[in-house]
Image (tube, rainbow, N blue to C red; front, side, top):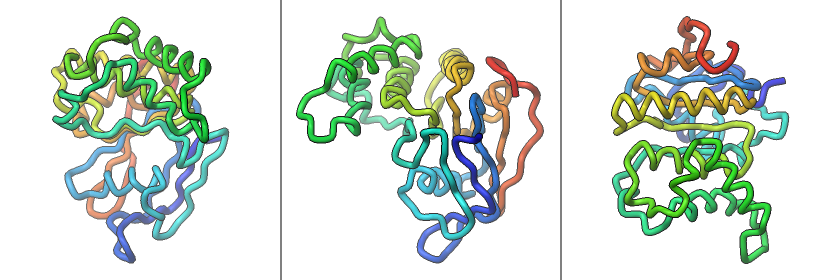
Length: 224
């Protein structure tokens, strides 16, 4: 069963739709890449998936432990990240904050989950380094670890390779392949269509207020 299923979804602001008729699902090990020009509705769709905007119409349902409040989210990279006053470990551990509840401190389970997330993205060696001193690719790995630390079954990545050189981008895509092979479902917004295609199980193109699927070959890192 799919982690997420959208049927004839309409997204927008107030009563004004930005994109309509969006239908797709994300299952175990899927990687759905969303492409399209600026203003096509990609960010609006992401906000809807995260529960920040209500769907205007259609159906959006979660299952198998996923929900709008339990999605691992990697936001677009911001320049302010370069001077973020924390270590890679502290940034990763903050991904467990939503699970603290009334507890004032992180537990042993929280710390173990954060360490495992760093291992999964190949960034455990960066644990004690200041986040602001890391390269762009290293920062994205740490932020991906933060998204994973909450143990989500579904990840939403918003332009994950923006600002990265081709080598760092490909390395991050290979990490996404590894996560897929472990059953994580991935939704990624990207402008880097050519680089993303080999890693996608599905590509959803948003254009002119609608969405359609593009043909893809079998992706790396898992079966389509």
